[in-house]
Length: 387
Ligand code: BGC
Image 1 (cartoon, rainbow, N blue to C red):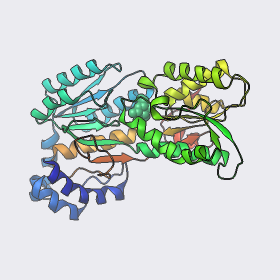
Image 2: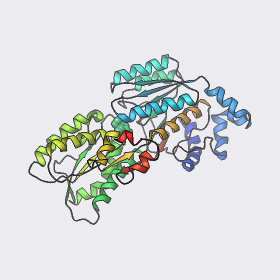
Image 3: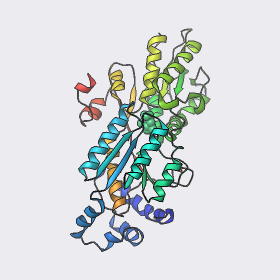
Image 4: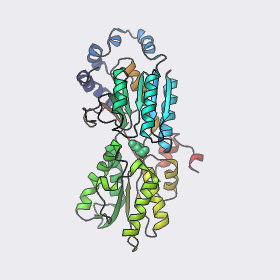
């Protein structure tokens, strides 16, 4: 399907999916969206009667194989993403090839090659480095295999058909807003000290998180109500290679010894995610005796939720990986059946070859006050997980 045809279809699909939201149960495109879709993209659905539809749908997906490429097992969330995807794809009748690449780009490239050679009909990829998959995805494109970028956008290749993720900019604004509300920045006199820890520069999401938070916090820095003592504010200065806890920890140790060893309190640690927050928390535990800062995070990893309960991390962003997996499984089915694919954003995510039609799920924040409701009542964790 060409990009041009896609964009016509997407405008109508967007209306339908916006009404549903992430993980909503409406599977079929809205009736008024169908004609456009059926004309160009899904002739089968056009002719199908209601009774015939399930059979046709099964035929389109039966025995199909889906390759799922995940970056690493080191971070809790990708284990959950992978197992949710596998479970839900299998439940929908697909064969699944799930691979983890130990955060090594070459390993991920060979895994994807194997998926292509092994007969996968669709590829779902959470990339390690968004810019390193162009060549291997050319092969996928030549073989007519659609690619869904999972959580992280794959850059500089037109082989990507769709993108499904959480609203990455919103992750950042929720972190920034949490800081503003908790310190009542609009009314408090300040000044407050802050240090920023960002994500991996090879991950397209990292800048979205950073920009979302900094767009809200920058005005306070400009007026002097927030002071970044290290002077490290630009994304390049605060980035954390590979999102590694150790990297975030050693940078924060340096910052603490240079800027806060004189007894100055550190009020805010804006951390883009939980693995970096953990590094910052380790550095504070070993090198800092002042008032404990507000610390943000993302993913609600078990270690961080435990820290939240212990008062060592203020909040985290909850991205329900079950919801994202369900959305992607739905996308896979829609692609294979030639149906209109649900998307709700066709402007934000340009991968350098054009905007990739995207489905953005909504993240929420979790803290000590609501974590039971969000994480336990929803069945995401059990009480025992958090002991
Ligand atoms: C994901 C985050 C995760 C980070 C590190 C990002 O692409 O969106 O949820 O914390 O990678 O793995």
